[in-house]
Length: 314
Image (tube, one colour):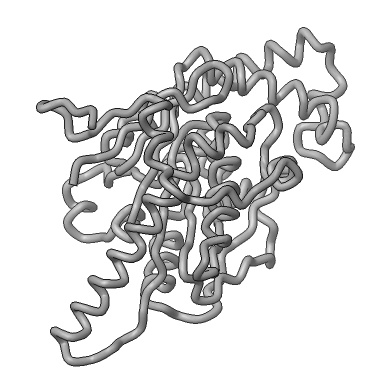
C-alpha cells in the first residue's frame, strides 16, 4: 500500500484505489447517472466503478465500526440508548463537483443490502437571506464563512446527532439566489446524513470561539474534500455559467436573468470576474486551507475524473 512516512495520508492512484473495490456490486446504470450528474460533470459508470464503489465499501466498514462502538458504549453504560445517524461531510470549491459526488454517494449507500435511509442536505439553506447580507454589506461575500448562520447549522446537526425526529432544514433556491421563506426540508432520523458545503470543515476564527462553541465538523463521522487545479476549476465554473446563461438564466424570474441578455463575450467576462474576485478568493482564503482536515481527499484532473485519492492514516 502506498505511503509516506511524513504524511498523515496514504496516497493512491486511480488504479490502486480501484483494486480496493473487492466484490462491491455496481448498483447504478447510465439512466441513474443521467439523473444524478450536474451540468458539465460528465461522470461515467467507469468513474463510479473505479472511485465510488471502493469508497462505498470503505464507508460501509466505517458505519459498521461506528455501530459496534455504539453497542460497546451501551454495554459499558448499561443501556441501549438510541442509535445516532452517521454523518458524512463533503467540502470543496464551487464547480468542483460536490453535488454530483453527494448524489452518487447517496444513491450507492441507499442500495446497500441493509437498505439504510440516507438523506442529503446542502449548507446553502443556512446562508443568511439576501436582505441580511445586503444590510451587512457582504452580498459580494456570499459563500464565505461569515455569510452563513453557523449557529443554526450547528443546532441542526446537534438535533440530528441527538436522534430527534423531524428536524427542519431551511431551503435555498439557486433560481432566486435566496432563501425560500417559510420552506423547509424535514430530516427524520436517517441512518446516514450527507452534508455538502463549501466551508463545512472550517475552524473557528478565534481561540475564544474554539473554546466555547462546537463547530460543524464536530458532528461528522467521515469527511471528504474535493479538489482540482485552480485554472481547471475556473474553466469549469465559466463553462457552467455559460450553460446556465442559455438555460436557467433565460427565465425572466431568475436572479441572473440579466446575464442572458448580454453578449456571449460579455457573459464570459462576467463569469471570469465572479470566479476571480469572489470564488477564487474564497477558495484560497477559506476552503482549501481546510483540505488537510478531511479524512479523504479526491483530486480531479481536467476531464473531471478523480486522478488521486488520499486517505488519512488511522
